[in-house]
Length: 214
Length: 214
Image 1 (tube, each protein chain N blue to C red):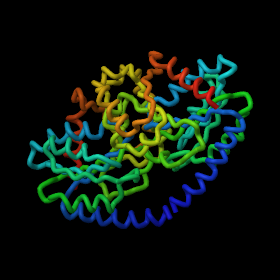
Image 2 (cartoon, each protein chain N blue to C red):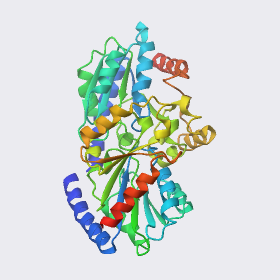
Image 3 (cartoon, rainbow over the protein chains, first blue to last red):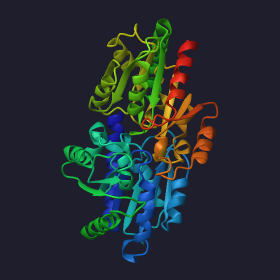
Image 4 (cartoon, rainbow over the protein chains, first blue to last red):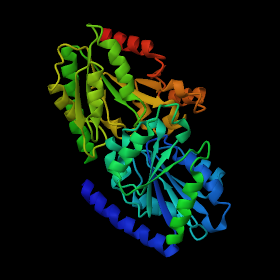
């Protein structure tokens, strides 16, 4: 049953992908544990992107309950749709397609999809995205790439978030980087702090380069 | 299909519960996001419990991959069985029963079950436990009880972990406590830090009281 669910999802993901190509939109799927800082990163990212008419973004946000994150995103200046999944621990391609219908995607270059906070469930669900970004916060520990390897293996980019807290939690950066490279040898890695701004310029440049490639 | 899975799980959970009653064992199911500090809490807890012949514990640990946590637990002096779930984002009653067979449960009073790090999937899976403990670390943010309300609603005890990092992350304690109480009005709440030892004596007393009630 799970397999046939995935077959259906993969078809709808391809439809999303076709839609993104036609609109020349970069679709970015953000996944992580709860509380790794996806929304905080988006707030800081959108402050920068929305000021640039060539790189405006819209956001689809997934959560089990509450519409708090979409409200935070709108406050940061971007159009946002909240999807509440109830008991479902990931977004799927159909939910994303439903969210897309509620957004004006002709005026934006990037569609961020902030997935449900979960390092397992979103792994197998292609949303049609161009870029899968896995956030790992320094407070979660260096061992997480090995423990949640299936997710890290699907990453195009790993964002090591909350770099400002690294010393407070005795974060072993070299070990964490080695574990990420072990699971995701082809993934890019950036280190960011939404609080101090560290790495945000690199992250924005990374996105803009990807927009250019489309 | 999911419903029939749960019916099967509930039957096996009752069998586990009967087994725990017969052995006069307190079974504790620990759930949280990845990196909220379940293993670190257990390490400090076991250092204290294993020194007391009346309150020795054994541990069943679930992870998608790796056996690191069981190794950490054994180093802390307790017998431990690692269950690797592959792509499954929670333990179920059958996996726990399999783990129990590999442990000598006649010499212990507490069986800790460290679930897969996930604030969604373990929610509906009864393991036959006496006590469900949901850890929420200060670094995850005050909004998580509302976003992952289904899990918090099932908590007997919420442990606010990493209290030592509260000021570094501008943690709003009153808001977090209000959100926990909103979702889990009957749950007990303790604040702990495995690093500084804050709250560990209360947590140990809490467990010992529960052992006495059995």
